[in-house]
Length: 186
Image 1 (cartoon, rainbow, N blue to C red):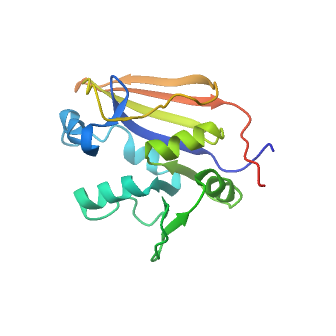
Image 2: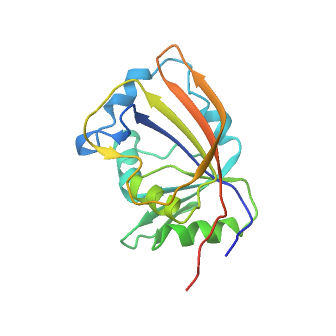
Image 3: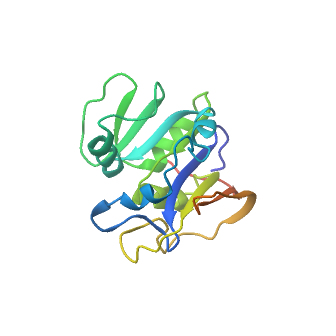
């Protein structure tokens, strides 16, 4: 089933060897490139986003570190295996992430940001639901942890939009993905 609608993107950081978190979901390596006044394009990207989707582990990690989500007044969907009651613009989705994206694409609005985690991204890549990737590569090799890209997903053609380097050593790659999006409702 070919789909139209809103664009879905990921904006994520990973180590040079492909990990988005170290062992025990450790995100400490991200601090290596923190610079005062530098957000690596995050605010500009968020100006186009009005909906955020993230996994429960990512949500728990962000809440543990920050105590709140940084998405402002955007609709936010947390994909979880357990049922939780949302509040305000925070919603919990129990079930298939690709079906959630399918439903969100049918609504009017801006871009949809998928902000982790690896399991949800794998599922969305499998169903060809990601249209755009902005990947920041942190100059460190972790050797272990949570891999961004798992094996066993379909081939996808990418087009480089921009490659940018920063004084911190971070390299940011921006791609669009050429594909026919699909999701079958059974």
